[in-house]
Each structure stands twice: as C-alpha cells, then as structure tokens.
Length: 273
Image (cartoon, rainbow, N blue to C red; front, side, top):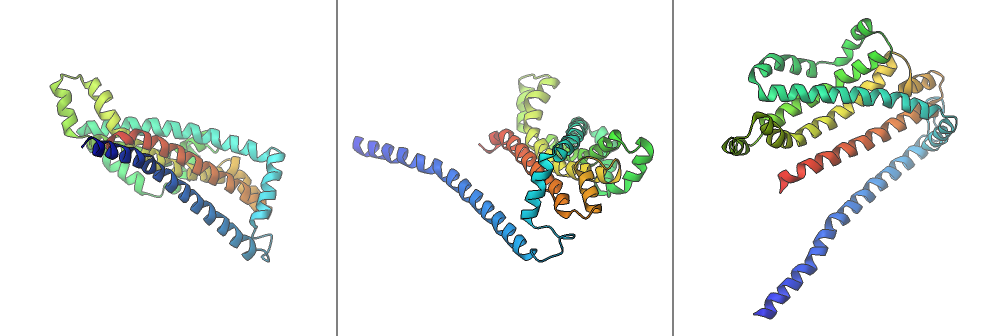
C-alpha cells in the first residue's frame, strides 16, 4: 500500500515538469510559426515586386536599407519621439477620462442614463469627419493632435470600464456589506480589482485607435512626426523611405499591444483560478 502511494507520488512529480513544459513548448511553436509566416511573406513580397516600378512599389530589402539610412541621419528617431510624445500624452489623458467616466456610469444609474446615448453615438460615428471642425476650434498644432487622439481612444475605455463595473459578482458585494465595508473600500477592494481586466481590454482597443488617430492627425494637421515622414516621402516618390515610418508604427503598435496584454493577463489571472 505504501509502495503504491510512493509510486503514485513519484509518477505525479514526474508528470508535473512535463505538464509545466507543455505551455512553453506550445509558446515556442507559436513563435516559430509566426516567424516562419513573416519570412515567407517577406520572401514572396521581395520576389513578386522585384520587377515592379520602384517609384510605386518598394521591396523589403530596399525598405531595410532606407530605414537604416533614416536611423543613421536621426530623422526617423526624431520623428518617432515627436509622434510618441503626442501619443503617450493623449493616450494617458484618454485612459484617465475613460476610466473615471466608466466608473461613474457603471455605479450611478442617473449618470449612465444621461451619458449613454452620447457615448454610443460618438463611438459609432466616423470621428474623422469631426477633424476639420476640431481644426477650426483648436488649430493645427500640438493641441489638435492631442485632442484627436483623446477623441479616438476614450470611448473603448469608457464602454469596457462600464461593462466591468456592472458585471461585478453580486456575491462579492454582499460579502462587503456583510463585513460593513465603506463605499470607498467597496470601490477599492471589490469593484476596481474585478473591473481591471475589462479596463485593460478597453485600453488594448483604445491603443490601436489612438495610433490610427496619431497618424491621421499628423496627416491632416501639422504634417510632422511619423505621419509627416510618410506624407513627405510619398509626395517625393521615395517609396522605400515612406515605408520606413510605417514599419516603425507597426513595431510600436505590436510592442504596446503586447505590453497591455501582459497587464490584462496579470490582472485577469485571479478570475480564472
């Protein structure tokens, strides 16, 4: 009997490392699949567009050379700093506003009734149509870009925050009442932790919309930053150099999305236990 129990314990301990290694193996397989797909796409692009008009189509090798040249002369770096400083400030403001309004709508029925039609209408409408009006109100400089980024990014944060707050398990709220928790403590210890994964999901959506808003704002307002590089080099028919800031935007968007996903996984882990 004792030997059987010991054998079972040994078998269980032997299985645990194998089970623990399975997610790592799966993750490596997924990374290899993504890398292989990227290499295949670049190879197809390189050979399919090799004989195309260089003024209209750039191949990956030319884009890599152009990107390196723009990095060496500092133009790409300064444009990235210009764009990201605007984006980060606008995204932070949009996140704070969205979380505050979302919590207010999720916990107060009157606030929700008042704001909900406008939030839904603005989220659904093509916000690009409002940019000319915003340019009349706030000009075409730094403030205009910040305002456009906030306008694009704030609504997903609001909507997801409201969803998270309103979906708090009533069981936890009843426990808080049973222990005579104050309203502030209920917010801090129950509602906020439960809503955080929803907020992180809203931030991930807002991230993509904010980057789009950043490029659109640079196209239509000050013609600066990465968007300005795209416009200037496209107008000069230097297609390879025009693709360089596009590549930077894609890399930044992926890096920031992965960062927000890590935050989402970190705060959502306790709900899956």
